Image (cartoon, rainbow, N blue to C red):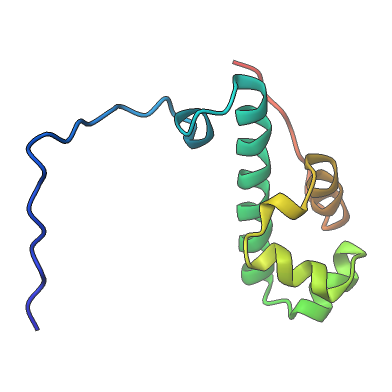
Length: 102
């Protein structure tokens, strides 16, 4: 099977990233920073569950939340979790969360 080749639009413009996709999407600096932290923590918690080989029920017990919330977490529904809650989940899983300011 051959890959379909999509022609490049000659008028297309490429914009370099700021390093935060949420800033690139037009969110203000504060909101983009919080959204970026939330997205990063969700990704790390998803990796943790996978690496530990936990079922959703086991992760729910470890995190102290309902299995349906673990499902939201594993599906990357970052908008359903506050930054505070994600830090709490990491702590409950025995992880330390540190914030660095550059």
